[in-house]
Length: 531
Image (cartoon, rainbow, N blue to C red; front, side, top):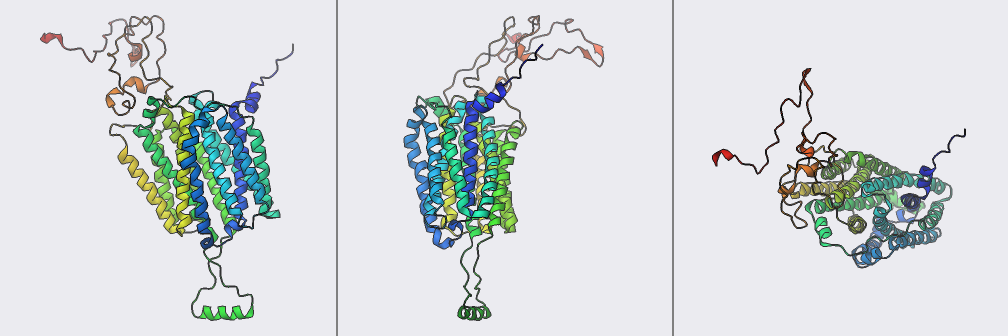
């Protein structure tokens, strides 16, 4: 007898499922972005004097704000209504980055590198917005959405480290142009693979009032502000460390006899002629490596932590840890402190983003998640640019920058604690289940049982569910109850409220039928003795 063939559905799902098609696109794109970072580390971008480049960097950062402050609010709804609109954005951003990387190959030592680098930056962040919009439509259910975002974050971290390693080795062999070539090939492959992502309609209809009310809930707004500050801190630290390791000014050239004699005289008079040379390239490698490890750990830790701790507590813990890490970097003022800061910021940003996604699902069950996540992501990317703008314009060292990050994190934490709703009582350790759309009403009693539940409270308008503590009942905090077993109709006066039947106490058997159990008193029952 021939044995049955193995089930190939798992392998087929891995290669052809809609989510895995997006995951492959995301992985190749993340590796290519890492190759761009390696290209910049060995190019004129980090060798030119910071004083000469601050104005240019600030200008390009200001231009980077345009897509998120102007274009996204105007064109975003139209793109969401078009079938395949966000997929077209993914393909276009990958193709645009491939062209920019190709132009980088011959311009790694030219000032043209600056506009090319910021073009790639804008396209990369536009891709992040488009990705956030299509993920909800590519998962099997809303319960899988947070897990899908976690897997994408893990894929990004691993692929980024692989891309940085490959391009770094080639850069050591042939220079930064080789790393740019790796990025170009990667983006071309990304654009081709992205054509396999399904064409979906993110939001066919405008947002309804209930969706707007849920997204304006205090829990969502506080979490959004905290996540935006975290994203701004990421941009701030990125450019803070970039300028910190580049050095401030060039030293005196003493290659000729006259300049050497002048330098000797200046040294005798106490004048510093060594300048502030740029840090070795491997310093950038250490910071990038720690950032990748931090993002990997954060993406891996967040789903497990979410099953034990409420999302609000996760965000608050992340802000506290970021503040402590920033203070450590400020007091250490060395490469180790910068690496710790990079690790803490990357892991905190990954954990905080996944916590925010989960909180939105919990607090806004009637929202269109594709549209909502795209809008929030556009705002977060704008916060990143604003954070990066500060160290690009104002010369800051690691000490001042570390204290600034700590102040921002502490401010966000205190604001979160003060601004939370007064009735909020989320335990530090709580295991919850995501509530599907339309949930919240108490399910009808099973057949054969006596309905002994309290009368239904009056309906409320959207947005009052979180602000009125009287609406929070035990049924909202427990999963749906199973059907009552056969033969329990005489005892289960309310299967959802039934207590476990004790069969023995200290070894002495107890007959549960010996005495008819008395139903629990209703909240609206009153004592008839006084009538």
